[in-house]
Length: 354
Image 1 (cartoon, rainbow, N blue to C red):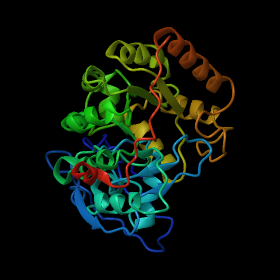
Image 2: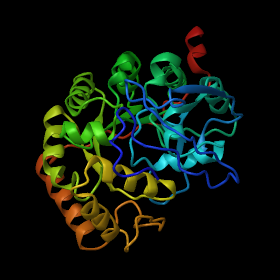
Image 3: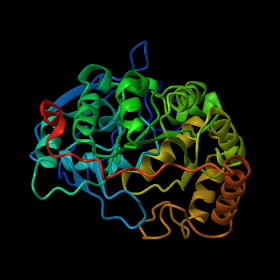
Image 4: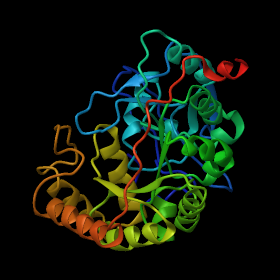
């Protein structure tokens, strides 16, 4: 952990690289000097090609409603300090810290793999979620366009898809999303963590503003694309008081529903978050950490099925009630249309030839 007196590094969530628990050896640079943009030498974003043999992952967690997911990218340049996906980066030999947001694995063959799996005799049409781990519309998508190629395959075979993102880049694909929506084949959730720009810049340094995210919800809704909001994660002492305002703003923009999770800081994320909160908000760091622990049985780390996503205790119950009351007030009478599995066609667009 770096000295807490060190100023917050701009443009990155993590302030250092944690030790990879799978690696026996690691190195520490003797001296770290950021450049004029706040970057540390060696943390400029790098991309690495990955060629997986399979692209659809099975989701076995009882706390997550999705059954299958696709992550076009491993690692995420958004740099959200709380991101649970950071720990997965260690499986690639990287750190959950700066490496996670500056060394991005790119699955360039994702669309080809998806098409092959949809053509398999064993495939039964079920919704597939994009961004079950990292954001499918992170900055790398502007260059690699993998998410767009996946949407083209979903539309070709008319297999339902769900998307969760916090990036306005999704509007680039409005044409595909609109066509999917005509057939009840897509749901979108936009993550909205805070309306406070100071907090957003520190918490999620390379993401778009709350104002832009609300504009995205509005434009998606106007295009007929069913859109909800994820007010997640709720971090006690930082954004829990914003819950009603977040839900009200999302509802005014046209969102149909809202979900949430309570932050949990498993593995290396706890060390990264503690370092970050003492740099970013030293005046309330101890209170925030104490309240997070209050939601998870006295620990920052919580892996228990059933409680890890929502927490437990009086504070977690207060968050649940506040969220439920706000949803009832602002989303009354609104529902998501059910995703349609019946339109799946193994022939893809070839059937138009007959």
